[in-house]
Length: 177
Ligand SMILES: CCCCC/C=C/C(=O)SCCNC(=O)CCNC(=O)[C@H](O)C(C)(C)COP(=O)(O)OP(=O)(O)OC[C@H]1O[C@@H](n2cnc3c(N)ncnc32)[C@H](O)[C@@H]1OP(=O)(O)O
Image (spheres, rainbow, N blue to C red):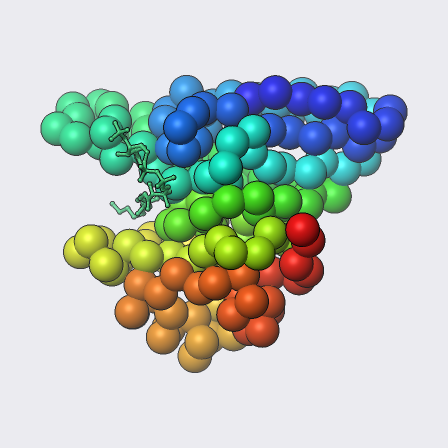
């Protein structure tokens, strides 16, 4: 994770785990630590973005291949900790979605106060496409953002929306080139 101060009050927080910013336990820990550190200083807002062409590919599936029970437990704790930290942060949080944001990548964006996204990208919770269902707090985030019925349809079908469709249903707030 890298931090660039745009002014004394606004920080650009970049996920920097090539190639796709898959959320490993370490990346989640680093993000949470970074947000907490910025909160402890006199910062007012952050822009969460990526240093590569993918915003975030979701959970690191490689780390979840044949894990031990202990690892799954600590991984999940880290994921929930990151969500709670970002969602409940005192900072103004903006997601600058500058690449694909599937699954937990979408969760990160929806946990922010405002979302801007570049065109020709995709965002959404596609877990059902590979036989999983997102945890209840992912579901609530989606329902809070786009409305319950729309969320049900998107989640059941595992839809990844284009930037334009995401704007149309309120999943993002602005298209930025
Ligand atoms: C138990 C219940 C859990 C429920 C909650 C689950 C939440 C999740 O987040 S699960 C993860 C869901 N993520 C996805 O479905 C995204 C999968 N990835 C993609 O669709 C694409 O990679 C992309 C659109 C994000 C980027 O496409 P592109 O730029 O074309 O890059 P590549 O597909 O060639 O990938 C490069 C490289 O990265 C590896 N990779 C991609 N995604 C992941 C991932 N989530 N975890 C780990 N590794 C990932 C991919 O395998 C390639 O690796 P190499 O082949 O070694 O280069």
